Length: 268
Image 1 (cartoon, rainbow, N blue to C red):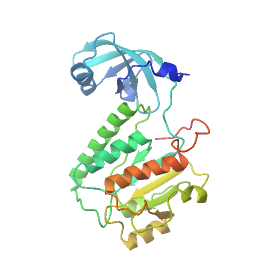
Image 2: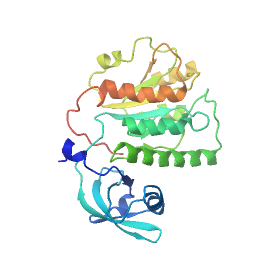
Image 3: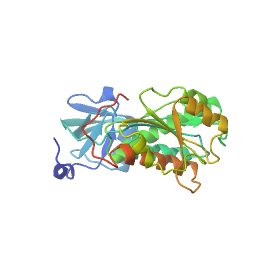
Image 4: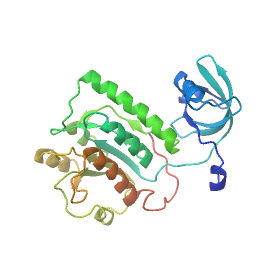
């Protein structure tokens, strides 16, 4: 077990390593990771760093050698720290223009989301060609890795392929609380959700575009077990609403609002 005092003395540099490259005694860094620690972070042979595989394993290591386009890190020992929330949350923001969804992915990872799926709805302003959508998802996955490195997470959340609103609402697991954050919905503050659903440990939260969802979409979501909920009296930008939605859920049922009963493991 790593104490808080000991954790403060751990190296700040954290590098994601593909699971098959993180062995029992060493980690083989990718070309991109090698370039980063060599040219950006300027680590020298003998410097300590933390390597993690995105699936829960995290280890303290020491940079042993630069080897061509890669680098070898000698693993000293695994770390027993855990920064995962007690709440299993999936966030599904609507597709927005430009790089707004990049920001949502980054902040959702920092806030402890377990899964992210960008969706399209009737009022989504942005429209993507299939090949562009694939490229965008790959970019969001890279953003998720970087955010996990920065925020101290041992798990990298799954970033799903893009889905339509109709496809996504139909996929809600039966054991999850479904919430549809949208304008003009439940006027009660979100805090009342904890009173209505006190024993919640799994949430699927959908966040609408700036113009909100169409009535037919809200009714479809209701049919699949989602509860429409508002986020205050002000109109938020789509990216702001998505970030707030994750924070609200973490406050109501996760580690921002209550002490986790025990370390929980989620299958990502």
